[in-house]
Image 1: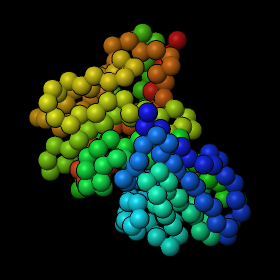
Image 2: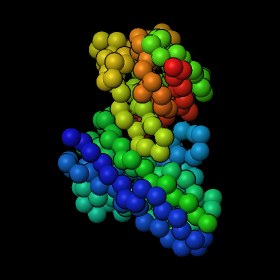
Image 3: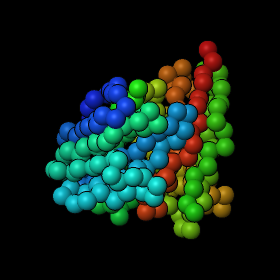
Length: 118
Length: 110
């Protein structure tokens, strides 16, 4: 149980285009979903937290207009990288939790999406 | 500020040898603590977690971790490493969000 999927697993796009990444909880309803970014040889940095039906909460330094997050249902959240540039190339990982954002609960992680912007 | 430190970037051990990966945290109060493993190009898999109670926590794949409040540490251990354990290991702490350490890459020599 507690499986989270991401699609696509890899995407290459041209500079200036937008890319959408989907995160789905397959066998549970996720009250909260999280988006992380992992730079090469570095740790995961939380980008934003989203609750179903409400606006995402972005971490300091993350551009909300560039990284659009939609959490339309209890099993789906999307991250859209708008007007992508090479510096946006990274590994993006989502996670999902049955607990509200304020709770400590375990997060279940997706397999990640490798974005390359050329 | 809340932080998690993993002092060792790389560790190499021989197959069958014991393993200890270090993790220290800096929080105002004891956070919830986790260890995750990540294989190349993959997401994170939870190995174990500590919320409260017994300070020695058993996880999957034969891993265990010990919470030591006096040292603000939560070190991960395994008595006998297998080649399949080669991966990157992340310690994480939850105060009001999940904060990760920088990770330790484990290499296993045959």
